[in-house]
Image (cartoon, rainbow, N blue to C red; front, side):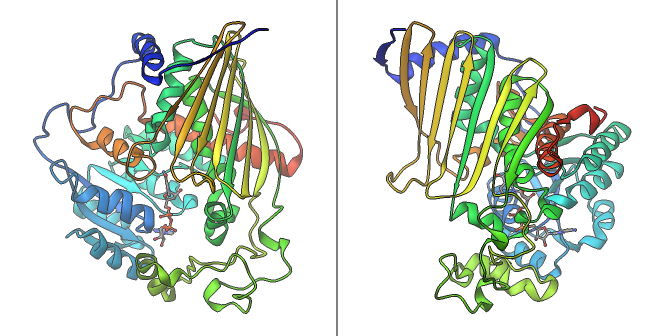
Length: 447
Ligand SMILES: NC(=O)c1ccc[n+]([C@@H]2O[C@H](COP(=O)([O-])OP(=O)(O)OC[C@H]3O[C@@H](n4cnc5c(N)ncnc54)[C@H](O)[C@@H]3O)[C@@H](O)[C@H]2O)c1
């Protein structure tokens, strides 16, 4: 096969893809409020006032979106943290202990409940909020086991309320670029996908310092972290997963070292452990976690060698889709660099995408695309992330939810089905790792 190498201007090539994709694109989605200036602001309450709640759905929402929304209640199981959060966000919202969640909804009558607790209890707040007549925006993953998934679907159906999931990855530039190219049929029918997720010993380790490394709280990294990636592929393909097989291991963190402490500040190995981290140097984290830990013993600088850690830190997942596509996914959380490598192979060509961020050899983030048509040309170009948290996606998702007149043409706003299917792939993967058997999605849940 002779491939003609061609470096083209990204704009001219993508311009063509955009035109093609726009023709195929589905109906635009609009802000929850309205398509013009809302007559009244949406009333919001937030449950789970940790860093995600305080930052993305607090500081970055309450003031910047004050023309459209009003935060009227904050709730957490840690009575100190909820007060610290209120001060950090700079809101007059009333604070509640989690045992008073129902009271908060009855008193504040919010339009939306935003759920940013630990993953394992999302379900309790999602279901109760809908039972009490509220719509919900939940952080991913929507659920950590299949029974939770079923409860959420049934509660949504019974209540007539709506749940949306915070899949900010769908709003990233590279995600939209992939969706456009695949949707436009540039490489034909997608036969297989290779997806490699690289997490380094900084970002990757951060999961194992906290509850994320324990499956009873997170469902494992295949649910907590990979649900983003599984959702991305489900969304790009517009197809449903039907069967999952996986292998994985906790090969680096957890009991893989002979020593362990309770947390970094109270550890005898601070001089010798290369994972020693002083949380007190970050004043926001100190206020939000260290100063509140007497209430619930939540140590955010937990030991990465804790023997109770049980989530795999490395593994591979195979997913069969109902349209015939096979996904070959891997995650490794202990690498010297970060990033992703995603390749789509179709019957007319191949799309290779390489994301470089937090690279020791590169001081900026870039995303390389290469599109190769069978027996024809190969073209490569680079794109760059937008400014802002999570490559600008954290603001775009809020624009989609709350700002009137916004147009997101690729159905980025994810509902319960997308939330459930992405979680179920991770849930099935963990089952497959434990049993050695493949798992059919239809055996886990009635959709
Ligand atoms: N979309 C994204 O990019 C993204 C990024 C970060 C986190 N997240 C998600 O946001 C959520 C929160 O993550 P985080 O990093 O802020 O975690 P965190 O541990 O810092 O915060 C969780 C908060 O929930 C509270 N909580 C725990 N159990 C509770 C209960 N039963 N009732 C009420 N409150 C309870 C804790 O006290 C804590 O304040 C997670 O679901 C995570 O997956 C999403």
